[in-house]
Length: 87
Image (tube, rainbow, N blue to C red; front, side, top):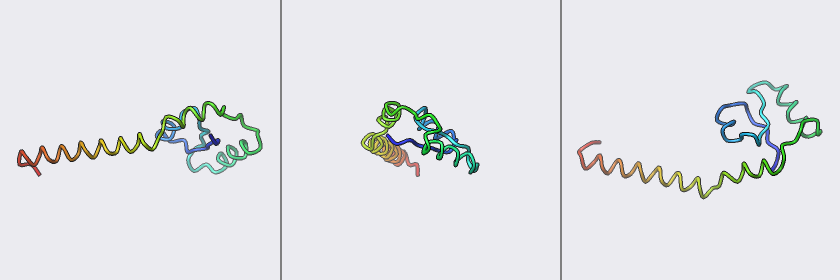
């Protein structure tokens, strides 16, 4: 449930959504402002409930299942291709 400051990149916005503070890539002053603003309570905190709800969407079990499914599909495709004489 910790406050997070992340780079303003599309992939991080997709993951962090409304639960993360964003700062532009390679703009050190903006990063300093974002982090210090949180530490000094100058920046509005994102509600804990929002942060916890976002974090709850990501579980190691779900990630492991996604990876396992991808490997199983890859193996199935290779096996099916080998049956048809494909590399």
